[in-house]
Image 1 (cartoon, rainbow, N blue to C red):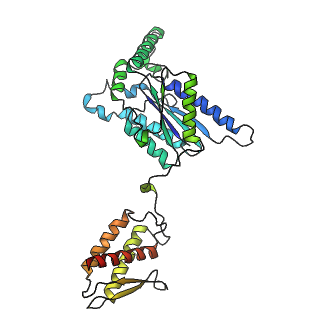
Image 2: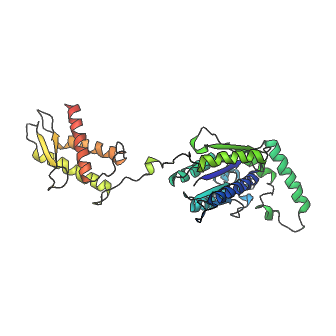
Image 3: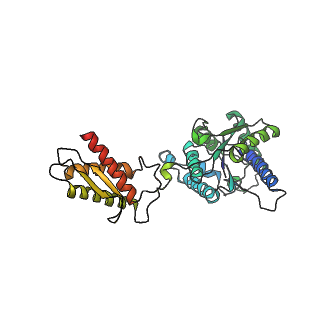
Length: 338
């Protein structure tokens, strides 16, 4: 099931909305399973910095030298931890709510690709809140923290509290670096916006739309990228090895059978030597095809098929299919070269 990525400015109410969404989805899942003896169809997970005990200090660049800020190791380690937690539970039977800043578009793209790889949809729940309002909330939390701080207590102890504040410099830096989701891009769509002022009724409407998009009857079927779909291979060996072996054999048979005058039709078995199916190579009339030209055609054919170009409709490229395809390629090349 889907990955729901919560995104927004720091202290914009993301964790509150994520909890509301969790409660809504939990109720929806339990309702769909009521009256049946089977277990609920989906499992629900809420992942956040708080659930993984990631301190907000990892995002603080104020103490990091300027020349290493782009390679902030602590922040990268935190994202790796979050990515691992998501990857462990993401499947077609799990709904994952990822609560966090998720402010980098490259990071959201990485999560989108991970969801697509397991053939499950992803979407964005964007929490809208103005910069001034978010800053007002963070300042209020800072004042409250200062009033409640017990002498000798470390301020960092509240860094995993979802209601805790960010240090002012850290907050400003995160707002500056925030890359707002763009619903025109495939990794930021579908996008469901909720603003700070939306009441419970409006939030429920948005959650219903989100459910219909990711778990409803009309939800989009997710297909992995064609580049990530491994081509079926014959049990006789590795695909690239077979590609090289079979094309070499075709070239050798052409050189052995053609006459000095050229213009011959060279017959060769489609499969092994005991194959009853025959393929015919039509050589150009009036000239003999030499090894350099045949090798040039063979290298071009292998370059095309090594990357899968033109083979999307071929389910199993075993030796017979490779030989048939290569002979067809040669016949086309000879005809154009005539």
